[in-house]
Structures are given as C-alpha cells and as structure tokens.
Image (cartoon, rainbow, N blue to C red; front, side, top):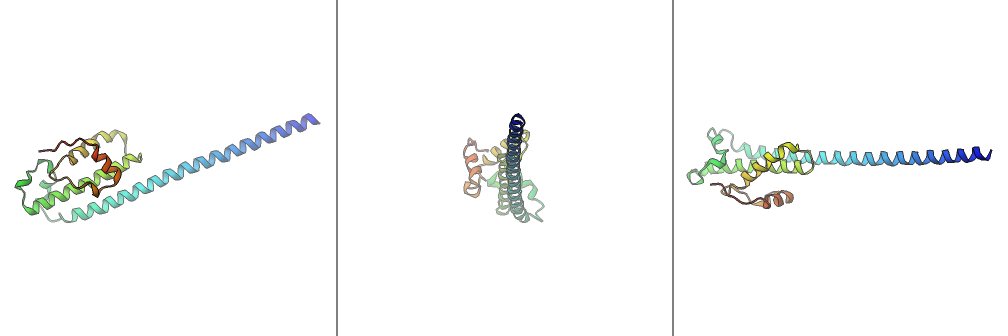
Length: 157
C-alpha cells in the first residue's frame, strides 16, 4: 500500500511539474507573438506616415509634364535648373529620402528581405552623396541619422 501511495505521489508531482512547464511555455509563446505583432503594427504605422508624406510631396508635381526628368537628380546640373525645376528636383529627392528611411526602418526591425538590403544600401549612399540636394539630417529619425552619418561622403558631381 505504501509503495502504491509513493508511486501515486511521484506521478502527481511529475504531472504538476509538466503542467507548470506547459503553462510557462505557452506564456513565452504568447509573449513572442505579442512582440512580433507589435513590431509589425509599428512598422505599418511608419510606412503609412511615409506614404502620406510622399503623397503630399508628389502632389506639388502634378501637372508638371517636364517633372519626370527632374526625378533623376544624379544626372542634373543644379546650375542649369530654373527655380521651378529646382523645387521639383528637391521634392523628388526628399520623396526618395523618406522612402529610403522607411526601408531602413523596415530592415532594422527584420521586416525587409535581407537579399534586397545591399541594393538599398547602394541607393541610400547614392541618394545621400548627392550633396547639392542633401537635406539636413534633423529631418530623419535618429537611427537613420546615425546610419547616414556612417556613410563615407563621396559627393556626386
């Protein structure tokens, strides 16, 4: 009788231990899921704000049939641009910076495919190294400012 009782107590203790481990494992899993959901939600909010800002910037170029040539600021001679062309070129460059900042944030939280990041790095460097159009760093989130500060300055002619 005593052996049966000790086996029953041992089995009960093991069952309690396994039940507790199951609950702890479930809580850890739920915590990870909540964190991932929050990260995705924040990234979605940042992307939506970037979309709204770029829509606002692009609205100024509507109806400007010659505006397309000004989107490739790397091939422009700033001294040959009229005031209006310079405004459109700066808007395009600002638009590109907002999109690159958004891509950087998406990458930093793991929501940007690693295979495309080297291409983004080149685009960011080319954008940032267009010194005639370079915006002040203060217009960007701190992490992106730090990233931009780490880029070797090689101004494009």
